[in-house]
Image 1 (cartoon, helix red, strand yellow):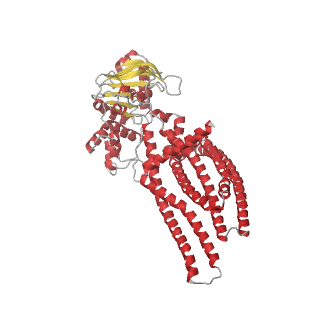
Image 2: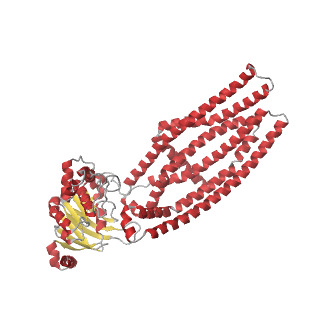
Image 3: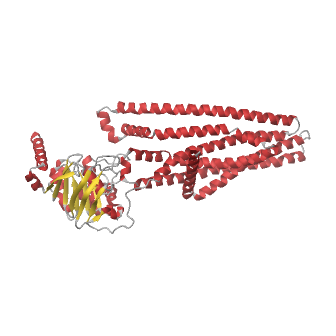
Length: 609
């Protein structure tokens, strides 16, 4: 009982939230929609009442010949019927217009809410399967199910109005007929609810499977995977994985469909049986002279339409139940609260680091992981210096970037900027201090100028600033040789796009980072996609660019690290060596060993050339 009550309350909550959402998106269209539903709901009852009048008038004038009196007796109800039909056609045409306008506005509202929530959620949201499942469920049915719920509620209102009108028409013949009308639809309603619940559970259970299908489809159709797919002949392998999963899901869907079809058949047989009983009773009343032919025509129309309306009404309730379950996924997603938030009273942030950034006794583990990446970690990054952090894969270097950007907060300890815990600053204001080149840089398919300007969309950009950033990253010459220069579209996804090499895309990402003009620069493998000549060219400029700024460079390349003021060697979440390049080489530790190995490898490559 408690479970059913909770389910009813949940559905009511989803309906309320959906109606608020619809109202906020399209209030005037919603008013027009409700008026249309009420009018369309009343028209069928008016129509069948006029049919009875026409039949009774025909019986009354039957055999009386053609005269103005007999014609006038028929013209009035027939004229009214034509008027009702014209009104119905008008609202049918207007209804499509109203529903389309309302649907478009609601669809845009929902998409906007999802986009806004996606941007507001913590970075960690995207790193875990369960969160991605929630996002997928919200996106998968949000617009369609919300509009379906809206349409179901509209049909429910219209059919309810019609049912009340039909009931009023049938009441003079006794309470039994309206009761039979309602009872005949109960089996279909129960079956619809039962099937809806099963379908929702199946959809919820197979969310990850459908995401796998999207992933396989991406691998088979995306340009990023096209080269390896052909070279290594992966196509058949991933096609088989896709098809095998589709076969299983399709079988499960067919089993649900069979159950639904059988249930509807049983419900239809019950409804037809009850209709036959009611028709037999009405026929008896006509034969006994208790009712007229007009009454029989009215009853037949009212009962057959009424039964269809009750069936539709029950179907509307079932659809509302089913759609509300799926719309609940949207509201569940929208209710997720980020954990990285502003403090109640934010501390004013310095315009530029004056002392240092300090990790103080920091312990951090990723959610769901038992092993800490950092434990009692300490590190000082002096303001205005270039600091390089080197180390093997898995040492925790990328974790430092995520913590510095405040994508995560430490489990214990603190990260301080000039002695103040960064959690005391506004998140947006703190991140405004930072510019980052991530290792997995993103190619944005816009013009070359817009690509640079994305580094700081809040700033008023001009061509000079854009070109300065492009020159600093070494991409300016390439852009000027494109067909439209800085106005050239980049990437091959859209018409007239110009593609770049991996190193050129990386230089463009560097230009965005430099255009931001932030006082804390974080570069994660900034030259990984560059050839040695391109790297040397960029390194010549880097020191001038970083002058006066606090720069943190994560790199495996010692040719870049050696230009830093301070180098920290990181292994297994610990800083094991620190100093300048010359100091670390003289120390003869891990850095010196790796330096000599890398230089020997480079010398061998040069010799072979």
